[in-house]
Length: 299
Image (cartoon, rainbow, N blue to C red; front, side, top):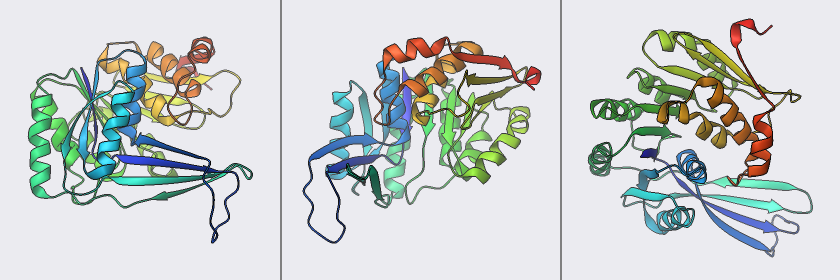
């Protein structure tokens, strides 16, 4: 069982209008509610391919209930720890005529020490059933950046390999606990460059592998080999990052080779749309168009 952990989930509220006039009443033509957060998107992708996956994390209030309902509708089991605060919402207002979307992000709820303690207990119980754990996304208010390091330690004590998809201090604390795979998060060009530059150092310090995602390719550094995957004929990859991350998980969860994993991940990333829906015909076609080579022989 793969466990994805999302400590800062969001309820995506999507409004669509023919034309948005700010400062005036607007008629909404379509409303959609969707569970958001990197770990939840990854869980939904894994479920699409038939994986046994459980979404865990922190959720509260009416928004938290709608998040759970949407996941259940997608066939994803969830075991969230309840919090007293309201899970955040992300409001997306789409203007059909102008093809513009405005996004408003609510602040994350504050997590108390008592709530964190209950989550830690729930998480350690989950580790008795898990085969792989994925720690993904940003942290809500009240949680220290060391939390991913602690969760990786609990998983290691239970013999469960950890994948960390995060950025900044959250990434560095987690990486210090020697996870199986680290995927530096999308926290800006400076952080991505730093993560890519330090990939070999992270591996030398005990991380199993580091996958660095960019607009043009995916580069992987391991102790014995470096790989680069790209899509033939596409200088820029039009990818869903969440789908790309979900596609990397089989290398840890199912023991796939890196070449097979990169083909799967890049094809999935391109075949998935922003809502997480996968065009399976496109996925099958794209598999043959992904090139994977040891990075040292690429000019």
